[in-house]
Length: 244
Image 1 (cartoon, rainbow, N blue to C red):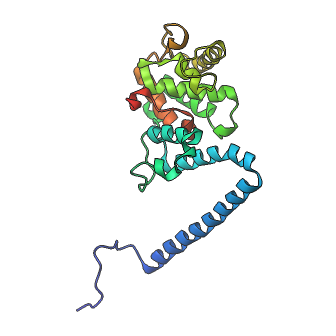
Image 2: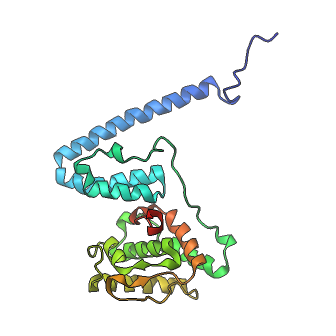
Image 3: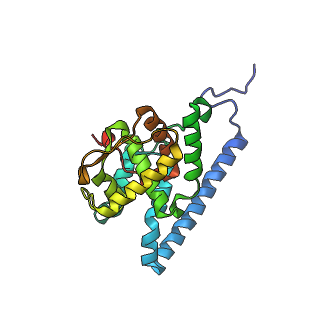
């Protein structure tokens, strides 16, 4: 009789060497993170103003790496970074499933499965919005924000005041000239990239209630899947359909 018994609860491919390697790796990460935390603490003490300006972006990047595109938590995080940090701790805003691994709520469309015109447009979007979004100029950030917000709402549309607010060009409900011009410029640039596709439906209404939307729901869905798989998705607010 073989005295070496197999523990059926353990995978047969898990060896003592593998377990030791995993433990060593975890310990290494723990030690390194402790050093990084001390470094950040030192920077915060030595240069409080500079640290305050870069810390929010660092937190957002870390959250994106952990959670992926998570519109609900993104809104909660934005509120915390703006004001709620004054009276609450970061751990208090974590989702109930914070112990789980990173979630992916969107899968980028496969170019080979798309109609030719949509495939060409997706290739242009991929090229246009490549690179580190924190180094994009204002026009590219505006284009991504408008593209994403409108795609997430599809043909339902987004009021101009909401777009202006999330471009950082006015308060909620503000449909002033600077914001209107920025929206127009972004939509024109994106329309050129989408030809011969018709990207936008005609805008309707006036002022902050002027509605902007995609012309085609299928195209909007494809673009929404694209933007949600990009690191720059942290620039986007949750869609109103998700908020309701």
